[in-house]
Every structure is written in structure tokens, then in C-alpha cells.
Length: 449
Image (cartoon, rainbow, N blue to C red; front, side):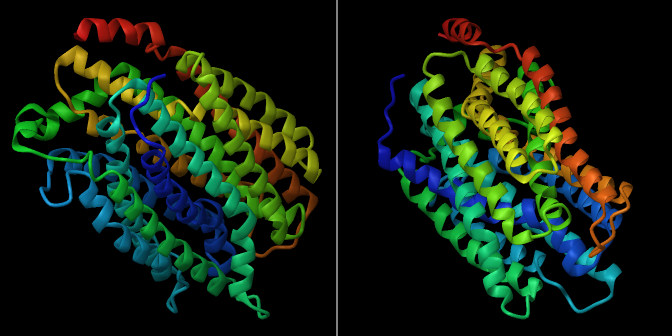
């Protein structure tokens, strides 16, 4: 496919995803175990707190998307302003989120929940603005695929780095006294600083594209009403279907990462070896995204998405058979992640297709808001995974810092495999119903001329 963007721009655009994912991976991989094993909050209470906080987080995706869609800034750009100004605030709240405050358990739980919501509201402003730059910077369909693939490649590459380094950094800061509270927080400090620098790099390479003028305001989406923005989602069947598919895809992926620490504490009996799982997952996702970019040149986006989801279901089910054996378990989890990486390569481009579909259907350009919806399934998927994992742990009678038992090991093995398998099965169903095939998009583009 023809592209107009240079390598410097495309790679610089992906740096933000690399550093962003390092910070977010701390929340995904270690926050539940931080709440239970370090702070001492029960699994049920942690699950309830995270569910409420993540519902607020998901709602903020819509709110931040509307704000970004309707506001414009002349100095730094419509979208770059958020990318420049908000990351330092995000960094502050993430550090507070990983703080073991000296106060009662109830007050501490409430405060950590508030910090979580504030941190992720800031994340949504930056992430939505970053997503909205994809159609702004894409002059050809090839540009959209290139940016989409590079975002996913940098995200998965950061997972490799995170898998190799994160627990080693945590244990380094924890010191000989194994002060895990300090270990987790100082690791977040390091990744928070990198997060700020990464997004400032995105702001630098996107500067020539994020140019706002009064003329564009008259013709563009900035003046669209709130109702028009919301209608572009609730009445946009293709968008709703891909969002549902993505919700269960992310629930599947996040549930494995959320329970990874518990798997290594209570089944492997050595949390330092979690780097094995995280590294394999990161490498598998990265390789899947590389293969996905090659396949996307010849294969329909919908078909590519479906193939990855079906293979993932099978791999998660096989992983359950070997769940108590580390090497084959990690192997099949890695294969499932590889297949998901193939699907993820075209994901952002599918949202751009939904925005293009809406323009042709209604004549209204609210593509920035539609692109911001990419984050909604991630938020809902994270909320579902966190809640189900926490309540699942409670169901198998887990309590913080308990001694390992065969019953607990079997319970964790069931949750860490059957939950993602179910998520990918639902992902497949919704993706099958998604109507915007390549031929359909060609028809729409012809009709829109």
C-alpha cells in the first residue's frame, strides 16, 4: 500500500506507545497483587474497588473524547496540546497510586481508588489525543495501516522490555529487606518519567500535521454537537461490533497478565520467574504484529482479525491442560498472544474505517471522537478482567499471603486459562458480525466521491 509518512515520523509516533505501555503494564500486571500482597486489602475488597474505579475510568473515555473533539488550541495544536501538557500530571497520580499510605485500611482503599481514577482520566486525555492523530496524519490507507501497525509493534516491544526488566527493577529497589512497597513505587517513578519523554517525542513528530485553522473549524468535527458525537457511536453498527469484540479480546489478554503474579507465587512458588511469562508474551505479541503487518498487505482486515481470535481460543484451552507445568503452559500462552498480535495489527485501522463509514453515511466528520472509542474496550476489558480475577480468587478461597495449596493452584489454573478462552470466543462472534470488509469499504469510498 502507498504511504506518505517517513520512517522518522512513523517510528517517533510509536515511541509514545512504547513508554506509555511500560507505565500501564505496572497497573495491569502488578496493581492487584500490590493491593493484596503489599497493602493487605482482601481480594474481594480489591476487586470491588477496582471495578468501581475502572467503571469511572471507562466513563471518562467518553467525556475526554468529547472534550478533545470539541476543543481546539492554536499554539500547540488541537491534539498535541493534551500530549504535551497532561503526561506530567499522569506521572504524579501513578506514583500516588502505588503508595502504601500510613492510614486505616478503609481510608487507604478509598484514597488509592481515587488516585487510580485520576491517573486513568489523565491517561485517557493523552491516549485519545494520540489516537485522534492517526487519521489526521494519514493521507493514504497505507499511512493508516503503517501507523496502526507501528503503534502495536512498539506496544508489544515494550512488553518484551517490561517482561525482562520490570520484576528485576522492582526487586532491585526493594533491596535486601525485600521492601516490595518501595520496589513497586520506585519502578513506577522510573516508568513515569519515560512516559512523559515518550509522549513529548510524539508531539515533536506530529507537529507538522496537527495544524488548526478557523477554516477547518467551520468544516470539521470541532463544532459537532454532543448529541452528534454520541450518535456516531450508538448508531454506528460496525463500531459497536468491533468495540464488543475488542472488549472481550482485552479481557482475555489482561486476565492472563493480572493473574500472572499469583501463578508464579502460588504455583511456581517464585515470583522472580514471572519475567519468563511476561517476556514470552511480549515477544510473541511483537512477532505477531510483525507478521500481521505483512499479512495485512494481502488479507482482508476482518479475516485477519478473525483468524487470530480463533487460534487464540484453541491455544488458551490447550494451555489449561499444561497449566501446572511451567514450560508448556507459557508456550501455549505465548502462541495465543502471537495470534492476538496478528489480529491487533489491523485493529486501529478498523476504527478509522468506522469513522470513514460514518462520514459517508451521515456527512458528519466526528472521526476524532470515534477514534477515541478505541480506548473504551480496553477500559471495559480491564475492568471485567480485574473484577472477575479478583472475585475468582476469592471464590477459590485465596487470602493475602496464604500458604500455597493444591486447591488454590488448581483454581488459579482454571481462571488464568478458561477466562481468556471465553473472552476470545466472544471476540470471534462479534468480529464475525462486523460488516466493513475491504470490498465494502471500497464501495463506500466510491459512493463518497
